[in-house]
Amino acid sequence: MAFTLASHILLVPFGVALPAITLLMHYRGLRKGDAVALLLARRWSAVMAVQFAIGIVTGTVLSFEFGLLWPGMMGRWGDVFGLGFGIEAWAFFLEAILIAIYLYGWRRLKPWTHFWLGLPLPLAALMGAFGIVAANAWMNTPRGFTLDASGKPVNVNVRQAVFTPMFGPEYWHFVVGVVLTAGYVVAGVYAVGLLRGRRDRYHRLGFTLPFTVAAILTPVQFVLGDSIARSVFHKQPVKFAATELVWKTDTHVPEYLFGRLHTDGSVSGGIKIPQLDSILAGFRPSTEVTGLTSVPASDRPTVIQATIAHWAFDIMVTVGSLLLLLALWYGWCRLRRRELPRSPWFLRCAALAGAACLLTVECGWITTEVGRQPWIVYQNMRVSEAVTGTRAASLWTMFGIVVVVYVLAFGSFLTVLVKMSHRWRLADEGAPAGAATGDLEGATPYGPRPLSTTASGDGGDE
Image (cartoon, rainbow, N blue to C red; front, side, top):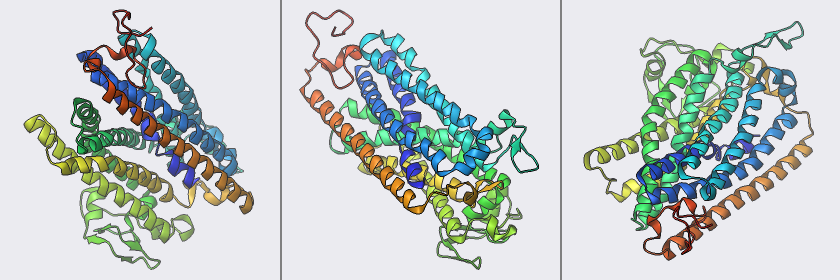
């Protein structure tokens, strides 16, 4: 399950956010009559479709694993929080239909009609994220039910089960995070091109729009990250203690940057900042922070799990801080000189920003899942009660099959992207001098197609 989630979540930022970034570029192209922007939007839509196809494979495996690996949880709690998965499934099919219409529209629809039909795409993606985050937020702060004499959930309140205390902080933190991740990844591709000397408008625009979106959202995400950490402090104090390596409940608690927790409560390595954890949690040194020892050892993460959650959280915060500095650097140059920063070091950092964001996405889910241990449904069901009783040999066989499927899927994904990129580059290098200035709405998504000399005035090649 860890392997499947860690692999699938690498595709999530593009599934959720790439449609919005593509449509933003599409709108710019139509609004300003910018053929380069339309060319970028059309090519990004092709990438979006390929990514969605791979997501079908990885997501289908993930859905099967919920039933096969966690029969205890799904059998007991499925009626309470299963609506989130239902919403995600409906959004998934809707997004598939909308992507098909959007791709088809490049050749067949009028420009603005095509754009407006594509506009629901980001909404469908956000609806899918809504369902998944609602299910995860419920696992962290379960609500919307009562337990009968045998311990089974009854009297389910759907609204309370969906809109749990952690849903709002998790959802907005997740959405903003995946949008800026997609922005930095897409911009990073064109940053590499700029570093290699391709300083044409195609690469500048391909870099500027997604990077601007990501740079604007970076300080917003920083604030949302602080907000969700504070929500965890109030709603899941033991998880907060694990991510901050707080052993005993106390005030004036220090903050540890990295470091390792030991069974006696001591922390080795890392950087200790006196009183900072209490200040961050409650804005004053006298804030009391709940420690891991406030609950029995069987009800809290182990020292290894706490250290893993702590490192994941600190990596996420460190990368976020560096991205904030990069965004400020970019913003200063854009506001002062109305151009990209001239230093090649900026482009090098921008090229690495996307990979760094993907790392933070992984770290965010590690923090969420490992910090909640040993509970799969917080304070209601342990992992040991939910997991399948399948023999170890069968599990290893399943794991091997999943690894092979995912390696083939991601290998195919990268192969197709490389071939598409190569084909586009050849098309650009071989295009006539004025081919990039006409109405490109009628061209194929896989590179400019020579226009017929008898083509109609709308620029389409019938």
